[in-house]
Amino acid sequence: ARNNRSIMPSNLKIYFSGSIRGGRSDVDLYGRLVEQLGKFGKVLSPFVADKTVTDASVHEGAAMTDKEIYDRDLRLIEECHAVVAEVTQTSLGVGYEVGQAKALGKKILCLYRPQPGKLLSAMIRGAEEKGSFVTRDYKEEDLPEILEEFFTECFARTHKDSLDWTTYEPM
Amino acid sequence: ARNNRSIMPSNLKIYFSGSIRGGRSDVDLYGRLVEQLGKFGKVLSPFVADKTVTDASVHEGAAMTDKEIYDRDLRLIEECHAVVAEVTQTSLGVGYEVGQAKALGKKILCLYRPQPGKLLSAMIRGAEEKGSFVTRDYKEEDLPEILEEFFTECFARTHKDSLDWTTYEPM
Ligand SMILES: [Ca+2]
Image 1 (cartoon, rainbow over the protein chains, first blue to last red):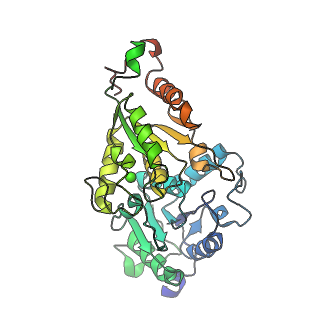
Image 2: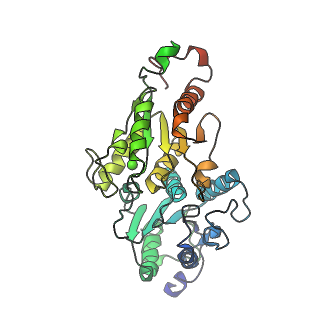
Image 3: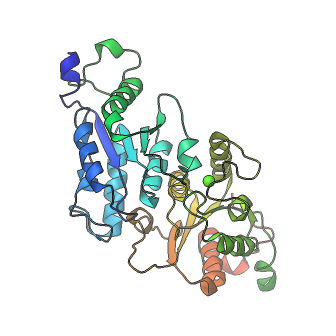
């Protein structure tokens, strides 16, 4: 089962949050992140990694108006079990989504690539709570291990050894 | 009473949200905003407008660690009746605070100075809800009117003519 764990999608629903209007310089990385997240569950927000969605887009995927985008994203955040946010590119929307997700009691992983002369927001860094709100400084090569640790820690603390992502029902 | 309304502090508690680690280029404006907000209630977060707090500060006022900053700000957001956020300078922390405030059912005013080549996040613009979540594009000279409208609309819809900010109990 250890082999299957990392390659089979489970019933876990993951909301991926990344910058859109705040800047799209990390969009390629978002794509690789969404692909890796697919090993742990279903990613509800693949449009965040869609290269045709730019920082000037007034539509994202099928959603057209700002209200439609907002309503869709809030619905997906309510539906998900975990939010994984790439927080390096400063973004109001990512902050808003993480704040909403925290208030809704979702499990949260924030991923930050340290930048010279910049500090990650205290509202992200200071929210740390073992097993439910995790922030990790990372380099891309560390992602597989960080993701495995997060999902194991947050969704299988009591059954770590027998965890089977293919059939796991988180709620 | 019309004269008193604009100059006397009421029992309303206001949380002002502005960028800190996202960038401090608007800190002077934050100071003028906090001063104007003082006409409508008590501002719980004057440290946001403190010029000695920089984007590299690891403390804000009395709070020293990121967890202390986070815990203080979340407590103040829970305590307030209204959040007023200046959202022009892109900030994760401002987004987080507005997201938390929305989830807690607070009244929210987001103030945005339109920028060439930039779009305000759909997670702010699309959250509009009459009488509870208001986003206004503005120039600084419009602030007195915008603030008066927001507080009247959100806190005195049924008693607009007799509203007295000096004694008003919002909860
Ligand atoms: Ca703060």
